[in-house]
Image 1 (cartoon, one colour):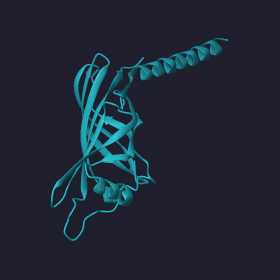
Image 2: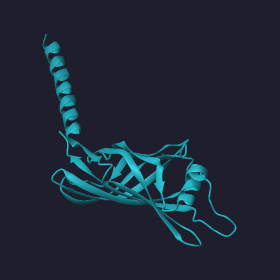
Image 3: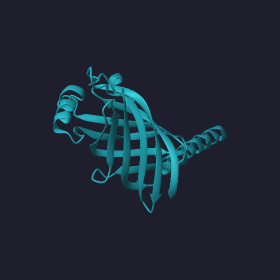
Length: 197
């Protein structure tokens, strides 16, 4: 009988520990939900004649992360067909021959890990590691972010470069015009911050 009571107490202890651990983990999970109307996704690519600037529209986006473990999840979904650079002819060629927007409608960044700690208030600097999927291919990228949070609202600014040919896209260079093989992407995210339960 004593053995059964002791075994029961051991089981009860482990169950209680598991429940408390689950609550602690849940309490550490934070969420930053982006507002598509206020979020900006800009791109810059250089060439021998001039530098091209443009932007895309965000469809939706949210990042869930845990400061204690660095684990992250969620997604940022950009409308590939929304890309504009200020030239109708150039944009038409970009969507038809480079991005192939009718076939690959979304550009998706999926966060997987965060290096650093995001404070509930004030400024934080972190790195978000994740997978960038575009033009039918997925590859890892790292995006440094400067996060500013205040009373449940906030912003996040980050830039990174991609070699678009690694995603299977064509380089639009010609004999006269040479286009840089890297495109710089800048994200200015604005949204709501939920610090956890």
